[in-house]
Amino acid sequence: MSTLANQLVRAEKEEIARAIRTLLGRPLVSRRSDPAAFDLIRKRRQPLIQWFDYFCGWRLVVEPRQGYARLVKVRTEPSATRPARRRRATRAPFDRRRYTLFCLCAAELLTSPVTTIGMLAQRVVQAAAVEADVPVFDPVKAAERAALVDALKLLEHLGAIAVMDGATDSYLDDEDAKVLYRVDTTRVIRLLAAPVPPSRIAAGETRPGTLAELTAALVAESRYGADEPTETQRTLRARHSLIRRLLDEPVVYRADLTSAESGYAASLTGRRILRRAAEEAGFVLEERAEGFLLIDPDGTATDTRFPDDGSHAKVAALLLLDLLVSAGPITARRLHAEAGGLLRRFPQWAKAYQSDGGGVRLAADALEVLTMFGLARRTGDRVAALPAAARYRVDRGTAVQEDA
Image (cartoon, rainbow, N blue to C red; front, side, top):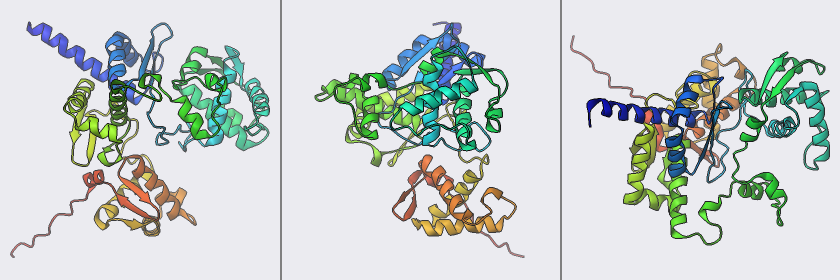
């Protein structure tokens, strides 16, 4: 093969790897928000579709005319480690009310290509009123309007709606605010990543009763078999579930794997496929006795970072992590006290926590960060560092006294 041909093959592999990591970090990429990334995905869509299907069992939808690419990511087991977040300054995670309003808005947006915030709010009022388990929506209340604004701003961010006139934030202070939206109904439909449509579950003979049963029914994947899967189906499920976890979670510990995942990771075929998946996506696979870690050299696939001074909780998490690593498991009370000590040492820092109970809130938010990154875990009243936390151990060095 000529040198030019080798260069072209290498360039193609690098583009595919970059596109894979881009989609992992942003499962919805549009031409409008990132034309370069979208053009790359459109150009390499066939190998990308094949890669995600083979290694993860995920479906990639690329719509060149509509101008977007959607990676339909599904977890084998539901997880709450990546909540939707408010697009306003606080970036706080969505609560149950905001998720409910997001779903109601998405359903009502399918009825018209153009709408106003007032018309949409009234349709949400009507939709909530007829659902037995959904609290009524009252746009007179400021807290309710704030929740609706958060749902709509996330829909804006995802490209499902676009503001043609006005500003969504204006609804926070004025129930009669005038905001006009253009609706991309196709994009709204693509937001749903469940393998089984909710309408099919509702129409079934045995409708799930609890939330856990409903969630399990939504994410059930027929390709793995139901009651009596074949050996091939069991192996396929183990491969997909393990690689999904590697791509989604900062670190995967062997102790947390299922028996099927553990057996697959220990097999020669499994180890070869894991290394191949990492190489083709441009990751560095780190294997240790405790578990696995995928490292993205340029951070393209990373949706959030640690360490990072972007929030007070992350800064506190890094400071408290040193204590967890050096002192071993500690009580939650001590963690609260240490966080309170940080606030007293730096009275001009983290002003949102500089109040009664601030140390407890800061410790809780910091622990949430550490848990999300697989660095610590709380069991009962005790908090312990996990093996990956050793990466952040502070090297205090050794003092050496020189002769005078």
